[in-house]
Image 1: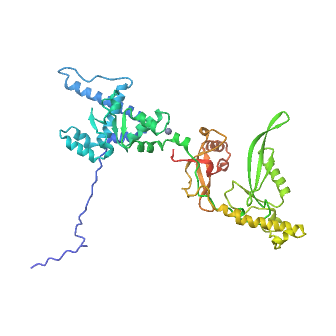
Image 2: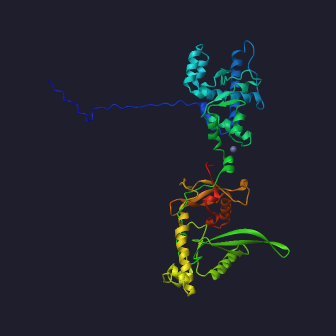
Image 3: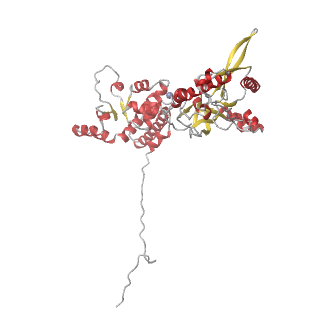
Length: 460
Ligand SMILES: [Zn+2]
């Protein structure tokens, strides 16, 4: 008797069963064609040509079949597309969309059992059932309740379009352009001459929010969570104008003799107490600015400058660094009480008054800075690659240049307060310079605070 050994699982002679999974996806050519176009008009024209070609092929077959009998075929069409052909193409596209989106409703409309039809429509949701949909000329239309009104057929029974479909978006976009980029209600009333979109207002909002031209007109500067106040603004007991913020304004036209000249102002603000000092700038040049600063320093002695637009927090070099070899000189000693106000020595009176001022400043003014009057919620930061409009109050809004963010400058608190941007014209300048052999790439990138730009929510 021969003993048969038991075959183990890992025996090389054992053939493993291979499992193959096959998935097939049906390609819808019409759907692909619709998705290809981003303009309703272009899609209509393309389908019109296709329909004409279909008609031509049909004619050929008919002629071949019936050549022996009579040469009666479809009417030949040539030359430019006609209005009827475009209308036919429009209906054909909508039919295709409806067949895909409401297949059961269209299939059942031809049935006798009206109760079944009504039950199915009810199942499809209130937005469709309340329209009492009916099929006419293979198009699903609103049955509605204004059939008796003396209006044209399309207005009484508009064609139903689904809420979310590429063709719906194209039609909304087309009407939005037709009414000159007007708002939702105007577009909706223009559309309802012929179409009824399910959840129309919501669909309208979805499409209009993506309109590039409208965004350019309406975009607002972003807001970011208000930053912590700098140490210089909340530190008491320093001499006035020790820490200053600087900003320039102008030009202001001034009469000089017979002519008008442009003059600018330079505003110095004491950071802790908000006292201001204004110097005149004779021009917008660096020399003028240096002179203004020299005048200011000679009047108000030791100064630690801080530019108001600066977002970096590097320690600025001041005369104190050179004279005392440290950033802040310690204050002269002395404790002054209320009684010093009435003593004979004037300097003790003055010091006592100063102490009173700083005590009140700490108790009464400083707490008011605690509140964040605006920009209370952290927002999403602008990032590199974003598209923005550079707001310039001197130019009309339509002329604000579009720019691309090259780099986001993150502040100490982790929020983006400024960005480095590049506009199309600066890119062109750069290309020209490179062609000429000048490589000055850094000079064509601007730094702007986020409050002076409007982010566009789209990318082109
Ligand atoms: Zn628009």
